[in-house]
Length: 600
Figure 1 (cartoon, helix red, strand yellow):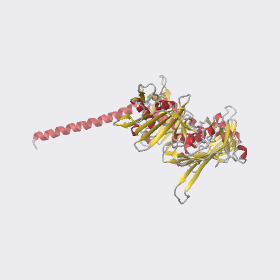
Figure 2 (cartoon, helix red, strand yellow):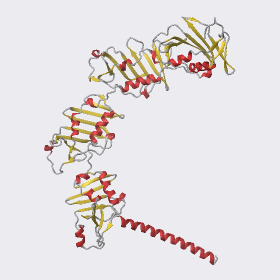
Figure 3 (cartoon, rainbow, N blue to C red):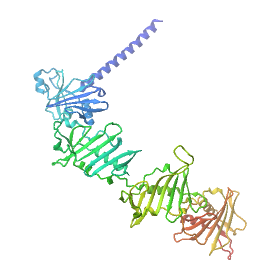
Figure 4 (spheres, one colour):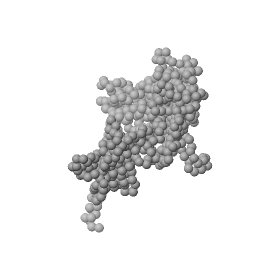
């Protein structure tokens, strides 16, 4: 290796060493600057405890996992937000030098009030700073003298941290009544002079075990639990006061027992006497062990009634497990609505075959039955069914699943899930009951009136399901007093519509023809009806590429420009909307100038 190369390598090495030296010095300078700027330098994640001395009060806070607990002067849950505020104030506490106080003697430190200070804070954990003492207020408002233990340097800092720790110990206790919320509760029992209520959650839904077997309103139960568990404690009673009689807790006026998924033992809330001054309620919860005063609104717990939490929906059902819905109106044939994959079919007792059903109408029926509110709870024991018309119900709606094969648990066939029955109508209400439940309720009669009793009214609104290009011929005939008149016959040839043999002569209006074809191909009914179609006013016969022939028969035009219609060879009458009727009656042919000829 040449001398020049050696010198070059030495120069590069020197530069690298210089960079490393400067980088280390820069890092050290930043660390030193931080220590110079902030009073307390520490890693918050390493803090295991906080010791606070404030005059006569000594508070010890300890971290247990993700939760802070108060160990002294009383064992209790600490206010997590208050602890975080203290730690944040510790981190943000900047210091300012005091002129002539860098090497202060004891007398100077006494003058600043930082010797045997009445207010001190100590962070517990590895590599924590020394205990911090707070002295007198400085002449500048909002600032205080401070000193670290073992140091003879006095500094000035904002009094934010001191103000946070000089509060009464109770201010650092968690003022929430409980450290869990309604999501973890699986059962709750309420006992008071109003009675006993026992609720349990099963498969995500709440139900009553006492005083009756009934569905509960999930939202109402959750709201009740949240209102109780989220109650803010107004104040804590002295820990050494064990005279429970004076607070009405030796024989509580009421209790609430919570069973949760995360605890083996239930949590008990006892409610005692009312405070004469504030109207609040004295209470004790087993997870806290202390007597406390709750706001006066807590009195509502003692007046809770079962109906306050009952499910006011007529029924609760998972439609995903339903394969069949059977409607049994009085004195009418039963109607079967059957699921076929994502669609539904309808069959009446007098129908020859299944027909596509109106899925939207079916889903709307289920929605109405599930969401319509109960007007009143009539009786909790359905002992006299005839009194309410359930010996001969006006309507029964049964939801079933269907097992097509034998299994270890079931036989093949229909398996009823739930049946809703409607009894007598009185005024604006009708009596109703879920037959698997013991009670009778009332609902508005409009709910029953919305359940169609004619099978045809459950049919799909889709009359034809073609694309316009699939229609290859049209034969339109008008009627006058039931007598057919010369019509229009068209064929689709060579990419256009042409007149067929026998069609009335004239010029074809191709725009109107295409509009008719577009409407006809995907024709939908407004509704199916039990009305009769009346005398035909027009027929439209067409053929499609699948070789089928269909004939649509239109009745007379109604005042609202709608009309009744039928399809030849199929049962049922339906009503067509005015825009569709207008499109189906468009002039297709401009007639030849022969005065005696009439037609379209």
